[in-house]
Image 1: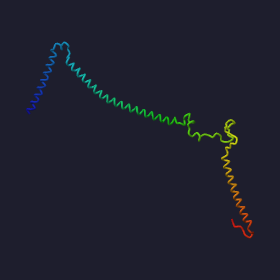
Image 2 (image 1 turned 120 degrees about the vertical axis):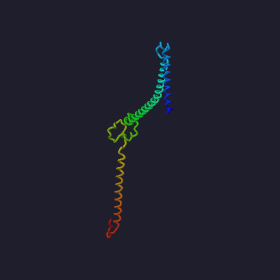
Image 3 (image 1 turned 90 degrees about the vertical axis):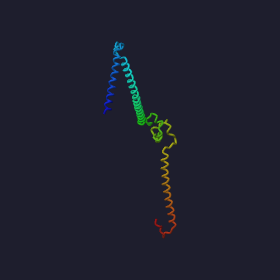
Image 4 (image 1 turned 45 degrees about the vertical axis):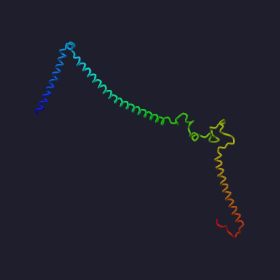
Length: 190
């Protein structure tokens, strides 16, 4: 219990001593003719200015450090947005080319078309083709455009004629065979 009282007395004594020292410093400033004529506490102002400068420097360093982090984040976001814009632009260009700039839509497509021979019409369809005039050099003497159809028809006709000849020959052989037989025998049923 006594120890607690002693500690409080020591604290009070230290506080009283600190107040006395501050008062002495104040009186020395007040009773100093130089300070009194100026009317300003130069040392106090200097210390305030130094504190203000230190505070501003600390804030500036904090702002710079924070700003660098913020600027880095902003720069990264801007770079990502730029990449996205480039990607979208490239996709739009590819889509436009696929839709609007197909090779078949170009003016020179008739020159570069690989299917031009298959799609194109023949030089002439028949001997009476109206596209072929006297100077077209498409009709020549002795030329026969109907030759494949005519050859096919001739083959069919030859086949029929051969079949007819074959059946006629078989009939003639049968007739000769039966001509040499006596009347009493009848021909076998067919």
